[in-house]
Length: 198
Image (cartoon, rainbow, N blue to C red; front, side, top):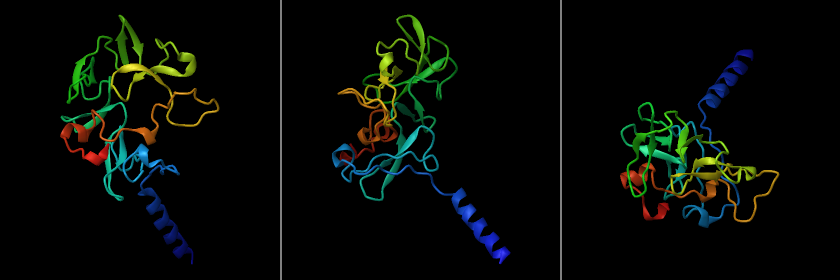
């Protein structure tokens, strides 16, 4: 009896060790906010690489790993990297996607420090309030997920806080509003986006 209990516990532990970690979809889901099935992206570190989310595909059981918001797919490394960070670039360079460009490129970081960008001849750290005017409203220096440029963005990860957002303010990474197949993603760069993916 003791051996049987030990075997059952070992099997259960083995299954838990190799189980996929997925953060479930939120219900109810507004079908106009994502693909036709109304599914939203998931964070799945056991299935997708670093800086990727698991996005819904065109079919009910179709899921695709692709770049998270404010991350760029770099074909030479076959990976997604945060924009305006060193990523696959040499020391003192950072990965950016210029307006109108398709492929990200490494450019010289005038600050020479990963995670810092120069604005009006001053180096600022990404993720810090300076130089944002609305720092008291949780705005920090970051990458705008629509333009992929450095901007003051609301520090939020679509988590309800005790303080309600003002009218018009939106969380930075509200997964129900992420643009499927956005500029800078692997599918966008490879040209494999489908009309229903947006």
